[in-house]
Amino acid sequence: MELNPKPTPLVSDCLSTDLWELLSLGSDEEPLCREEGAALIEAGSPHTPLLLVEAGQVEINTATGGRVTLEAPTVVGEQSLLSGRPTNATVLAGGTVRVREVQPERFWELVRTDPSGTDLLQGLTNLNIDRLKGKFHPEPYIALIAHDDRKGDLIKVAGEFLPYLQKQSLLSTEHTAQRLQGELNLTAGRVVRSGPRGGDQEVGTLVVEGLVKAVFFFPDPLTSQPHFMDVGALQRVCDVCHVPIATNRGSAIHLFTSLCSDIER
Image 1: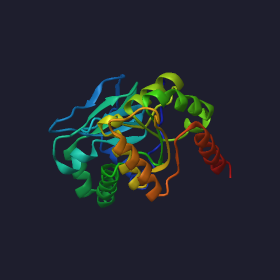
Image 2 (image 1 turned 90 degrees about the vertical axis):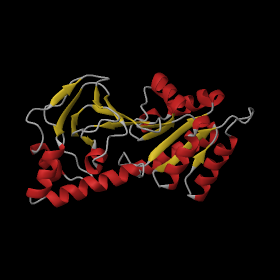
Image 3 (image 1 turned 135 degrees about the vertical axis):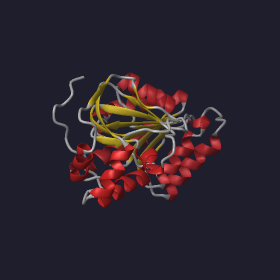
Image 4 (image 1 turned 45 degrees about the horizontal axis):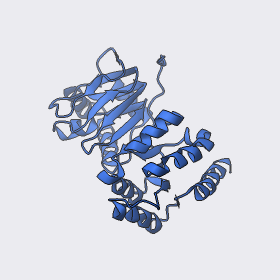
């Protein structure tokens, strides 16, 4: 993977370009390059730096068994830094990445001495709060979920709208995400546990938080599911929160068509 020599500064509601540059100045002098699969942060580590990901992508393996993929430029390790507690997630390089490390003592020195130190602390705190609520990506998710005998149907429909999905933040359960990656080369930015292990409930929680704009959920109507109550709960929470949900090929095509037309307007 070729890394851009000059990364685009991070710009978000929480961390402005100026604050990104301030953190860069406080980092170790030279950026580090790490290859795919390298552990950037180990779960349980008592002392971890704040990482500025300048190029590439990182994979966060959460304590609940989920996975979040973040593209550069981004920041990771803020929760442990702010709380002073051991990190509860493992962060891996998702390909070749370039990162800068900001040691905790250097970060707190910037907070105390730099004129923008208070803004830096507030920005990183807001970022941490967003992530604790489940917001790891700037745009709401498109959720793609299917039971085993319906995964092929979902993959087929998703393939018809591949250019649209390639530009979206995707949310999926574990096994459906594997099929999307393997057959369509679509990477889900957020992967939760499989449905029987609570993944449907996790998706429902994100719907309630306003982090999902549409759900494509293909249940198997001909097979009894051990987690059928979770399935019904997800459908009900979409109704309560006015989030559109498609449960078969016909409704999925109509919903995808509507979403695509919203972009063209």
